[in-house]
Image 1 (cartoon, rainbow, N blue to C red):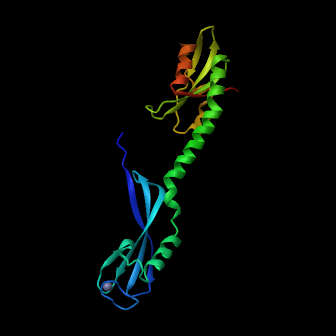
Image 2 (cartoon, helix red, strand yellow):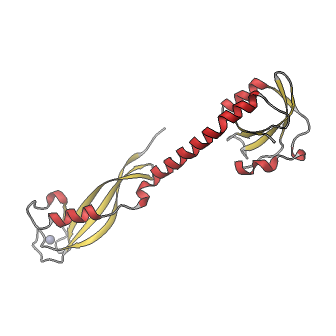
Length: 206
Ligand SMILES: [Zn+2]
């Protein structure tokens, strides 16, 4: 997969800067300091802030100076560095990282909750167990199977005739009239394989 990443700079603030222009010597009052915040981005998402950058522009002669171009012993460098250090970076520069943290926590919590219970209940199925299926190639992607009969190596299952777009709504499909009355038989090993492949995501036991 192609991943586009790099840094971008965003203007944080513009402040008037006292002192004469190093180029045209125009009197104080003509200099502006633009403070930029750089951030690392992946695709269009800002991940975290990196360095700050200051450009000093003279409104009299239009010259623009980088920090490194300001005379080291001159009167401009110290105030420019102070402005740079004080400029706060906005929260959105962390947006991508915050999103990743939230996604990791959700994945971790779901990972803790499910596989143990799912594997346990598939190993010892009971009549009335409801299997939640999530198949992203289907529209809508969520539906249910219900255990109708448990045989030594085989399960007799009722297939739900309906689907839903949200996992949180899947419980509403669990009504007698919503299952196809004609059961299907599947090897228990095949049903367990569905869980390992991620198609069977949960087992609800009444
Ligand atoms: Zn100037």
